Amino acid sequence: MKTLTIVIPTYNMEKYLEKCLSSLVISPELMESVEVLVINDGSTDSSGSIAHSFEDKYPSTFRVIDKSNGHYGSCVNRGLAEAVGKYIKVLDADDSFDNDNFREYVRFLGEVDADMVLNNFYWVDVNGEKVRLVENRLKDRSVAPFTTRQAGRFTRNDLQMHTVAYLTENLRKIQYCQSEGVSYSDQEWVFTPLMTVKTIANFDRPLYLYLIGREGQSMSEKVRRKQMHDETVCILKKLKDWSAYPDVHPACKSFWDANIKSSLMSVYYNYLIKYGSGAEELDKFDEAVQAISSNASKLLYNCRIAGTCMYPARYWKKYHKVPRPFRRKAIAACNKIYRKSTYLLRDLSNLIDRAKLMI
Image (cartoon, rainbow, N blue to C red; front, side):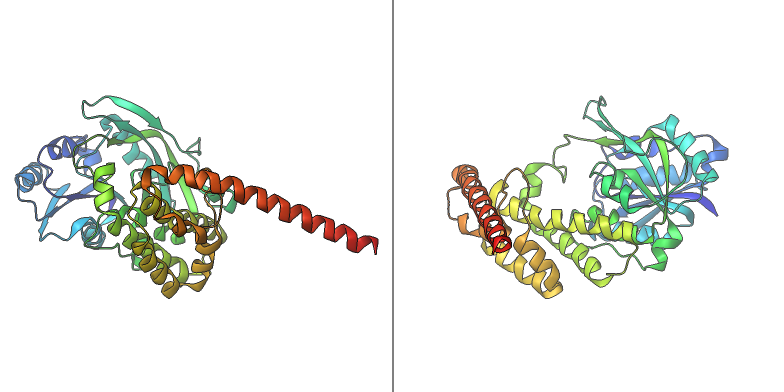
């Protein structure tokens, strides 16, 4: 058995793929412990030939799987089905690994036994300059239990696609399947698999080099605005898993609850405030949430998002007709009114309670 399988979803990445694959070339004895699956998702450029050249040169490590286009999730699903490594990790074709730290990472994986392994990462610009080091909150390499306290301390930086590797057999046990045909399904990779995690190991060096600023990148604001529907589909998929598995262990439940609340509110924020799409899409979203889980619908109805809008989500859609440039000011004014009315109601309730005690 290999120690690690790396799945690389690839679609028209000829400009970046050679650098990505070269970053995985290490000493021959260590490469024997690694399986690299390049999932060529119907590329129409030279990505396929680049990948096959590495397969020809390093046949015991690199393997190319050519298939018709099915988007990101279909590549992850195919990679999971084919993987032979003890651990599985996803690497985007426009990103790469720090080669020196990758050597040590492979050795580290050969020595630990944990359900999830975390790593740090760098943001790297299009010139190859390291812009920012992102470190998780685990500071040593010991294997630790996944606790509710730990889950509550995790930030978005701690759990991203770039930072996690899982035991392959655990994902197969739950028949993990990522959404296909849409973008942004990588958020599912750091949600549903957590139900399998009881122990965590931490590789305390920056392994992943995450490219930012690439034209057409899925995380650019221009692209995200066009593909908000895709993001909504993936959030609803997470909601289905949240609703289907209410008895997951406490640490996972704690993380899931916080993540679902944040994800639901992000849909409102993006449609109404950030991209100004209006409320029609939100009506459909509300109906879908209600169909999946009445509890989630109540959570969405009452939850607040700190900073931008403090009042409950049920009031948000009333302001979709306000011209977008004025929405922030309108909502800020409503925040003040809502807070003041809340304080007044609280004070009134306290006075009533005191009066009852005096009678």
